[in-house]
Amino acid sequence: MKVRLLHTRDVSPGHVRSAFSGLAPPLVPGEALPFRASLSSAYDRSRAQYDAFSVLEAVPEPEAGWLNLLLVEADLFVPALTYVFGLSHVGGRRGVLSLARLKPPEESAVSEELLLRRLAIEVAHELGHAAGLVHCAVGDCAMHRSLWPESIDLKNPAYCLSCRALFPEG
Amino acid sequence: MSAPVKLMIVDDEPHLRSSLTFWFKEEGYDVLSAGSGREALATLLREAPQILLVDIKMPGMDGLEVLRKVRETAPETTVIIMTAYASVETAIQALKDGAYDYIVKPFDPEAISRLVKKAAERYTLLSENRELKARLEAAEPALVTAGGGPMAKVLELVDQVAPTDTSVLVTGESGTGKELVARLIHARSPRRFGPLSVVNCGALSEGVLESELFGHEKGAFTGAVGRRRGKVELAHEGTLFLDEIGDVPPKVQVDLLRVLQEKQVVRVGGNQTIPVDFRLVTATHRDLEDEVAAGRFRQDFFFRIHVFAIELPSLRDRPADIPVLAQHFLARFASAMNRRIGGFSPGALAAMADYPWPGNVRELQNAIERAVVLCKGDTIEAAHFPFTTNGHAAAATSLTLASAEEAHIRKVLATMSFNVAQAARALEIDRVTLYNKMRKYGIDRP
Image 1: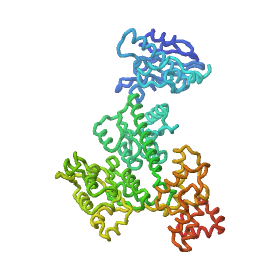
Image 2 (image 1 turned 90 degrees about the vertical axis):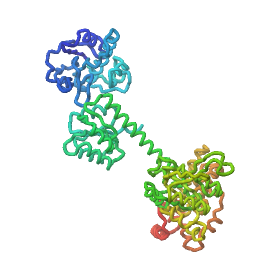
Image 3 (image 1 turned 30 degrees about the horizontal axis):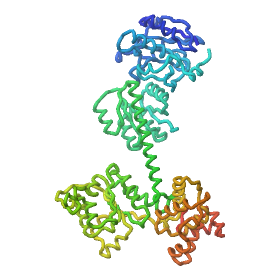
Image 4 (image 1 turned 180 degrees about the vertical axis):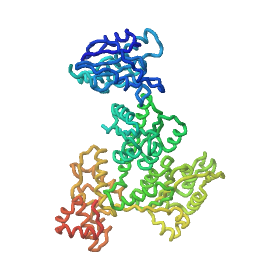
């Protein structure tokens, strides 16, 4: 399946390039485009966060054989939870992923490397959901659920054999 | 593999219900949801979820009311209260009303996941504990019953008296399981977390019994090299079980009566009074009313201990339980001795049904153990038992024709595993006649 990586203007081009080039098979890089629509209606003043469901609704429906993923810097939430890394309709072929919670607390060359690895893993994770995959019990599979940022580091930016087999054709 | 833990989300916000349902389903829980307190209670009765996540603020019945109703109808259910309004007072109230914990919306993904996991682990531990307890009780041989009959009535009495603080007198012949009943009363009482202090009063001389019961101070008598706490003192906040109470000498009866009245004890050779709080269970194989009449047992002490009496039936009074007990012991000994013995021959079953079992369950247990040692095939035969049935049966039963008929019917029914049609054929009478005779002699099918 081809991937269209959309990104808000505050996401650094380096992060977009890294996410795009590091896509896990069977995902295939399609195109990376800036996202022009405003997300202001998804902003919740009381929580100073963006409603992930509203942001997801703003992501355009992709054509057949494509998956659309929107990369944002905005911090996302759903009503029940304090935050989410990202959100996708399972099998809906579109998703949203935030970099806000993936960043290590201190900025350094090492932390940048860690961020890029987390980004690759969570891009694979959200695109997996968008393609129809659910969470996986295999601890190091990209589809394993992560409850906090450090737990992402226990996974690999790739799908386990079972998840790969479940990936839809085309 | 065990079944997944069943969880119910109770919240009037559909969006929150659906997102939490999705979230917990992915974690492997069996998830239900309800949009109101009433719907939750109806689902609770139908589906019996083990964990409830309940929103505190809902129209109609609020979360605290749901919590109270759940405590009344399904007290084993774990309730976690959710709220968007962090209020200490409400949290305290919820915990006072029996909530397991309290969590503020929106939830930290890790915190909610961990909290529900902890509640699920607690549920698993509690259910394992209940299962083990049930297995342990089933493993208490004297209490094994074929269902119904006099032993089932005893267990009903135990269930009734155990939660109270009433003194219990357990009577019955040797080997009927009096101590097991005492232990069961303790295990099912609110004092079960306290000690069970046991004294066999029949095995000790007066002086030793006094010291055993009340303890002694250093130098109280020759050999009292140190201070020792007695079993009465050790029973504090638990249960004191005095076995063979009918054998207690009169002087010790007076001392015990004083302890029961004053709820305090003085060690032998000491002068300090020690307050004690215990529940008393006593047992004897003697007829204490006869002992009182004969002047060997103090009447005031008898009235003190004879508040609630449980009489254990002898094994011959519960013949339907004999094959069940025998099978229970056979399984246990065959496994312990690594023998493949499947059951009893009809002759062996008849011999057991015929024998009066003066030593009751303990004797049956010993007989089966011996039979398992002697048995070379896969079935226990009558010849493997140490008793000769004819002599004992004749001695134990009356000489009337009716008693002989009753004994014979019981024997044949036991042999045929209480299959009435087969037993009627063996007796060469019709089934209706056999049913009538069973009713006449009070023979119940197990």
